[in-house]
Image 1 (cartoon, rainbow, N blue to C red):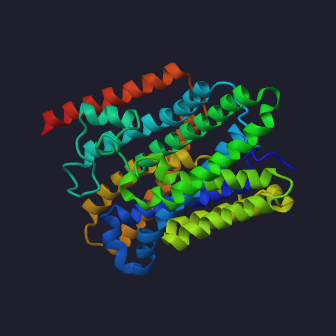
Image 2: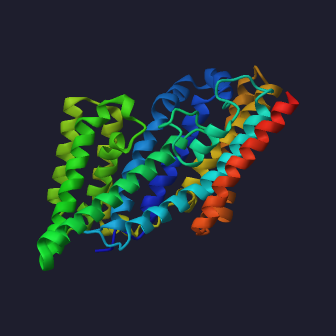
Length: 377
């Protein structure tokens, strides 16, 4: 059986579709183009507005799957240093993130006096810039500088939790069981992830005030980890049943559409990746490429869409057709900008020092923009 750690076109296909859904959700959610174009396709606009965000659950499941595949494909931590894993993840996340936020700050400054709309972020200050740079904006109550910033923070929290849990299990089992610690560590790692998934689905995910913490989302992420282990094991029945029972119990207790989407995604992912046919499927090349650069597209699409919104709403403030074409243009330009960010930044593995420089650059650039725009005002 192929290792679930190896990226497959199927996973990239799913990521590409989910990425496109998120971009279109934000186009429908953050007007004014969608407000003007809405009479042309009211049903579609309403669906994108209400349900496009469900694609986030797909990303969370895939995130858990890929984390388990990388960190512990059989439930046993296969990394040596937890701090190294966490630092590497932080660096890979925040360097393209910092570039995208600088762009978001600049675009918001350009359109703020041109387009009076709630989707335009407020002027940055030092506290807001530092909080966003460190992925702490929601925790400390600062406004996000771009749409979707919260997801990057949650993804990092979930990865850190997974690393620390697996490292702790290995350390405890090594101290208690000695030479036979491997067998016990794998079992205990599986058990704790299942317990954490259950606690999140049944308790924490039902408390909206916790949505800035990993505990709120670990249920969906944990289903993805369990799907990975279902793919890895010779007999998947136990894992598939565990995923189904946890998801069903969560839905019976408190039906949440986002959990239903996560449950279906986890079961479908495990089923498909156990099939040689689906593992070997090459997919549709454009969608696979979108999946590969989905993180960069996700990061950069908001400032692109914000700028197109400002231009189109200024030139054709009451023309539904032109605003609909503007939405299409914003989507296409988001893909183009995402590709540039992916090719020029995300694909290159930076050093820890470079990551810190980029974060400092974000704060410095944001303050420069704030000072400059205040002088213009």
